Image (cartoon, rainbow, N blue to C red; front, side, top):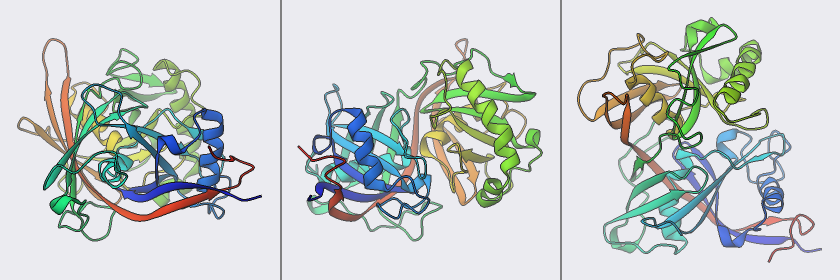
Length: 363
């Protein structure tokens, strides 16, 4: 029986990578779609040897694009997180690093035409409802990938992709503070449950007996920490109104500690079964918001950033991520207007990826 070929573009987006598809080229129903994505990535084996995944959560991500049906937007971005070994697909979260490649991919796929030397792509996140503007370099009517922009966690330099995030407060739960509190105590640990671009349960590293400077590999080897953290994350999910999150990658979990290298704060971000080797774009917005909100678990770990908009420098295992936050405070508390980040992306391959016809015979 022949295999089914599916057109795709393979991108590095920020510090993640994965296949980007036209939504119309994939199954409509979620159950069949999940089976196809598992086959594409090779989920179910730690090396993803029978697919194009890379054996890590940051390399088993999928973007599905279509012309947007949302007013004021150009592209609908539907994201899927495929488990490395468990064969599970989570359609709840979004990914800001993969989002870095959405603008370039949409242009490469012919979903939007270049607009001159710079193309502004207005993106609607199907998973969360967030709206993001991506600013892509397109001299001579084509996406430019080479440039001088550098991001920690990616070797070399590339052309910049500027991301401006709007309407990201309460993207998953409908509230900045889904539990209604600046702090909650779960199993003896102070946490802040916040939802900005991504729902995150935030704690202090020292409360787990950690310094916060551990490498991602050191944390992943510390299974006692995960055994303590995961029940707290699941309990927080219930308090945040997200129900049973045992089989979901959200809410994410993060640890904060004092800055060591001139940044605002040090962070370790969990996906949640592994420590992110760098920092998630969506998670960074949530952590920056926690830094700027008085009374969260971040208070007392740093010198508050000055100026408006505020520049929050988040130290992560591979360097620093800059988040520019336009916000206000007042009687209504912390109000986020927009958050901006610089990312890069590169087209790595394009063509057809094959799945067994027994998984999906195609359209």
